[in-house]
Image (cartoon, rainbow, N blue to C red; front, side):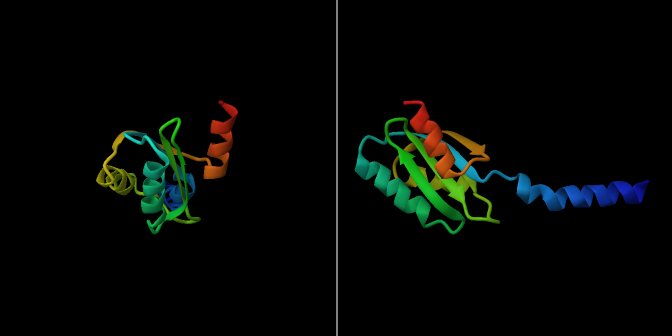
Length: 109
């Protein structure tokens, strides 16, 4: 029985990366113009685990998608945004791609 539990636990741990969030949805205060959005997008795009970034200025939302097999670091994303001079109100891990999140935001218009 002990071996079964150890093997099951090992399999669950090995499967964790597939359960990890593929994107982060960040609510940001202080973004007021396209230049603000461009600066955040540029900084987050330079992060090694980042595949795509989208900034919705109207909703004050930043969407960051991880590269396949990579994990996003919420603390690092928050630090980049705060270092840019903005406030992070909410950071949320989601299982959708940036394209899916953009479509969802577009549908809410």
